[in-house]
Image (cartoon, rainbow, N blue to C red; front, side, top):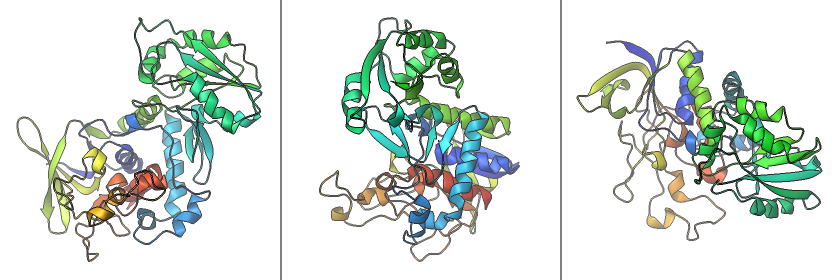
Length: 404
């Protein structure tokens, strides 16, 4: 039976990043996925930490935090690798670990991120003379007037104008941003013609929903080269074209690197050989199949992805390797009295603890398996949503696990 260098379990951001890093180091990589991963739900932007200087903030975190295990020195290296992978798929990103780049949300607020798709970079809005907000006829969940009302709070001295664009592709039905992005692929000239009619100048900006195609930057290039004003995409409700563009950028790199993908592959258990996992067992309709590897990277996610589940309160489980899961004990510590308090939620800190090599450990700090590495949302001891660190932890932990 063939033994791979690396098996990655999971096809979200952390899993794809880990596979890409391992492949870049000439490793033989197998990716086992069960589901479509989390990127279709994501904005495409990567946050490292809710601080002006995430590099310094990471140094001051408690020792049990995932970033302390990953190491501050990995942040910039992982960010550069991420940007390079996207660029190879003609999906340019801007930013760095300590950057604060504004993006316009679907409701017209500004969100600041470290790594941002070039099409969403709103850094130049403050210098624009006039800002157009263009809605799409038939598009759900995008309300130009609401965006303008909220953006005026940030730019009270700017002139705003709303517009309605007809793509002539809808067939009389309501569509999502993903529908529009797919419809516009190879039909970009329709949008370009509609935007030209706005007569926006070089000192203006046009804000649109994220509909500029589903593959790289091609659709945006076709349109932007014909429009004098800067075109800026917002975020949107899932499914998210920017998230799918990023997913496809990784897939393009992995496929060209010879990484083998096995979709709809539910990993049910590991094959334990002392302190090593020599392989994993995949369940399918006919019979179980064994995949063997020298190293296993666990990137199945947390509660939201099924990488951790809890059928009994105060008893969370990791379903594949039966790793110990750490969590705040007691119902009173599970969540805040006020759901939207400005402090971490206890349940969000649930996850697996590791040593500095991201090997899983028990309550006494003992390494359980020295060739199994835990990455991304599987890692415990921090509220990644509250910290705005989910993307950063995903790519940096994946980078480290793949290079050990």
